[in-house]
Image (cartoon, rainbow, N blue to C red):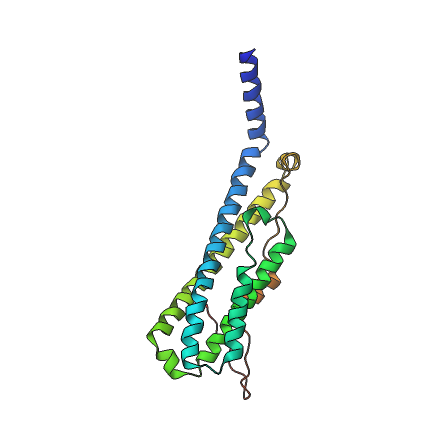
Length: 205
């Protein structure tokens, strides 16, 4: 009897391996790992915001609107954390992207404002924070691209026969991904008009 149970177990394992179950598991974990890195980099950026705002405030106190926009956008990002288990919800992912995009836009406007204050631009702490922000934006782009690729590979895998049958049996679903519209919102800095000729966009990337 024990031998029969062992043989049955081996047959089940072999069947699951042959139908792509293990490969789906690995790819699903790869997506979660890639998402964790995206979250880490976004959090790194959010952690820079308070010091950046305080530094700018020291030289440009009357730029209250821009400073408030950055602070509010940072606060909203803090309420929009998305766990790997919630990645199957397109609406939650879109809301997360929109919140991050708003923070990106607010930070871009803050960088534009800083151009009007030579003393601020010459401040060593501001220069350091700006360099950190630029580096973090680059890391966000890399992490986001890796996540996009991981999701594409996962979605392709669970749509392919016989993996699609296995995915259906075990409840694996196609995952939503970053959209082109959201990518543009995140990466494009707005043009800010200070009452004269339109200022050239300044990117935090």
